[in-house]
Image (cartoon, rainbow, N blue to C red; front, side, top):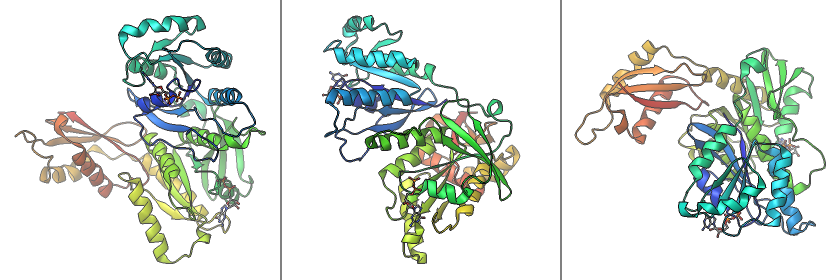
Length: 437
Ligand code: GDP
Ligand code: GDP
């Protein structure tokens, strides 16, 4: 399951507060487009093992020709257009306003799953305050307090019940081929890369529309490889005003990531790795997709050996703890290492499908964990008895132990590093679970 959940509503109802509560403010992306006075933010969220992306669309543009209210309407329309599920936030203390009713009408017309969160109801005894909002006729109406969390669990339960199922490959495509996307901030060189690599569509075999309205999978057969490049459809409409570009590029990235197996994260060598790049990296990681980092425009740097090392280390430092990731220095304009980048992405795809026989896992790793068991906890010694890789589409390992509940994060990281040292999972996020034996 995956998807985009947009938080919509007029200013000051508590959208950002709710966003922070629902996402734990992890890896929030701040839109630094000039003129945006309030940040437009998105971040991954998780609830009951479902991952999705929450977007806070409260930003409005100063100096825009539109009036303040027109601007809010426009933002709401955009957010609604791009969402799978809409959380409509109102202020329970202030009551229903005409602007609320207008936004409600936009939401209704979209025919998308939506939930009304009547906010600032800080105590269950104030829940009656939602009654005024019932006349909007929304099926799902919840009293919440973004400040203290009251009601937000019920809200999230409802959100995940409306999320789209993850595209099921077997029914979508006849071939089980790698799905690869190229993501990154505007102007890092994504289109130049794709055009140079694919020779302007010469190698296109077919365009297969995905089940979701979000992605187009174009099949390529070239250089002996057979794969899909994932692009996002429906978002390429002309005539969008410029201040929406960053917003669109973000939406496109999220959808491309969700629809791919492996993502090529493109950076601009002349800018280094910045907060927005990192946020995209974390979106890829949180979605459990494979990743290759391609540092583009390498032609612009002085290409001593050292430059690459310094650059690589700076990236590795920032992407910790998941730093077992291939990094390539490329140039789309000079056609340097483009094919290598594609090859690496396809290697990551293979690694992500790796299945290690249980016997091999246990023979190789158990002695290591016997030698270096988890730290004794409250006088009890903990030992790992048995390891198996789960029969899931991506690498997940179960470690059976006598007292799994006492195994802490540092040991978990040690376990992950040990797996990565002995088996090649470069570019692939892996999950480790400790279970009771
Ligand atoms: P936005 O403009 O819709 O994003 O609203 P903000 O998140 O910036 O919140 C507007 C104001 O409402 C701030 O002063 C918040 O502290 C306050 N606020 C937000 N959520 C709650 C809540 O659940 N209870 C109360 N009492 N105040 C809230
Ligand atoms: P996108 O927005 O990520 O698709 O970026 P584009 O492919 O449109 O490229 C943005 C700008 O960067 C264009 O002016 C490109 O010509 C330039 N560019 C792309 N790749 C390279 C490269 O490898 N080296 C240099 N010097 N410029 C590049």
